[in-house]
Length: 177
Image (tube, rainbow, N blue to C red):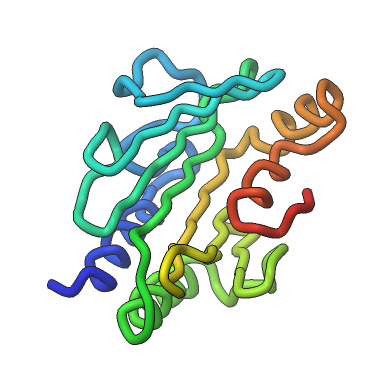
């Protein structure tokens, strides 16, 4: 199966949570009692980011470069970020379109996202973007938010001066909140 299509299928699995409390990759939004061992842990104020490179924990499959789980001190797991392998040309276009089509099927038409080349589904608490990669390729970046994310982000803003979303903005290259 072409890599772009495989990447799309992995994100479709990410979008396939069946209830408000079900997070991608079979995880649940909220308190975390156990997660796979990450390669790296990064903490800032009330956020703990767990980094999984390709082949670790939820970052499985041929189209996945990395997965980041963001755990909030009070709300538990509230964000899942999936980064696809670098793609270009038709493979990138097909992967993006497949993900976009599934987002539309589940959540309706997206709104423009915070960065060029990004789209958001507020009702589905999902964002599709891409970022530059080596050799003129791009990596698709998907994020899904849990129901307690807004409260988590407000706590983060109170403790640091910036919302939690600023970290994803940095990841996708918007440089803003």
